Amino acid sequence: MSSLNKAMIIGRLGQDPEVRYTQSNTAVATLNVATSERYKDRNGELQESTEWHRIVAWGRLAEICQEYLKKGSLAYFEGPIQTREWEDKDGQKRYTTEIKALNMQMLDSRGGGGPSNSPSKPAKKQATTAEIDDSFDDMDDDLPF
Image (cartoon, rainbow, N blue to C red):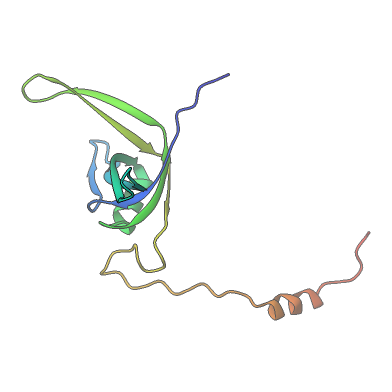
């Protein structure tokens, strides 16, 4: 059997996405996302445990994150977990583990996740059952089966 490296996170952003650009002008977004778990301890008291996840998005996905996500936004992220190594300014080896986002889904209610200065998008028209039934009346009945 082959191996699998895939993380799926649903959480809230702890701050606005931080976007920078590489020398080749590729966008890179860094996001800090919190996931929480609530449980009762031995004494029956409600406890909450929060984990922070570092998520990195590249290219167009990074730009979409910058445009539509903000501190507090609820979102789903999916991608492999990777650990990077680098040397800091003092020559010490440093490591960071992050999720390389390949997919992102905004989960806030309509209008809850976009930038505050952008106009709201008009809602898409939903066809009613009557409109759908009327459109079938225009079809030919000469079906070959």
